[in-house]
Structure formats: C-alpha cells, structure tokens
Picture: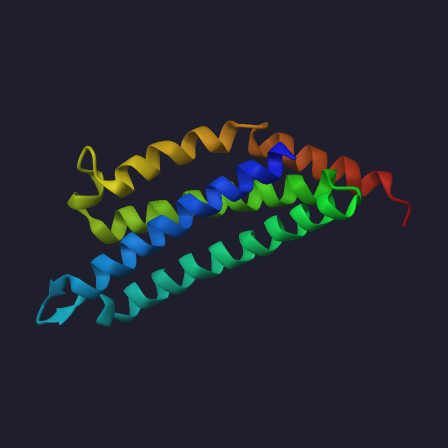
Length: 142
C-alpha cells in the first residue's frame, strides 16, 4: 500500500512540474517567438507527458489490484519505481526549461526538485524495487 502511495505522491509532483513548465513555455518570449514554439521544447514537453501517463497507469493498476484484493507486490514496486524515476526526469526537464527561474530558492520547481529526492528513497531505493520485481518474476512459473 505504501509503495502505491509514494507513486501517487510522485505523480502529483510530476504533474505540478509539467504545469509549471507549460505555463512558462507558453509565456516566455525567445527570439521573437514563445519558448513553446520550438520543436525541442515541444519534444521535451511531450516526453514529460509520456513519463507521467505511463507512471499513472502503473499506479492506477497497483491501486486497483489492492482494492480488488489481488497480489500487489510486483505492481506496487513497478508503480513506485516508474513514478519516482519518471517524476525525477519530469522535474529535471522542467528545471531546464525554466532556466535560472527554476533554481531560485523558493520557486515551485526548485521545491519539487528537492521533494522528489526524498520520495525516490522512500519505501526502498530504485535498486530495491528492481529486486522486488525480479523476485516476483522468478517466483511465477513460466
């Protein structure tokens, strides 16, 4: 249950980072255009959305399995790992898009950047999650 909760928290952080990045990119003028007009910015925003949606689906599956009374160990570890690693990537990308504003003490993205670090070690580091996933895979007869 706690791994799924950590995944959900990481999703919230990632979604907020994407919202901040979108707001900045659509407002920030750059070379006579908006930052969002550049294809590399668009690709970065799309990758951020992809990371969030993939992690959300894994998180929802783990929560559904828990509610249904199913075996949730592997699903929760996958959700936790995908959501926290994905959130780290999303928040780092938002930081890049915001530039100096993203690292200003007290800014939303700077705060998210610090917060995601704690979630990445809560309920076991990523390597622990991988071991749990592998253990569950190996326990199931092929």
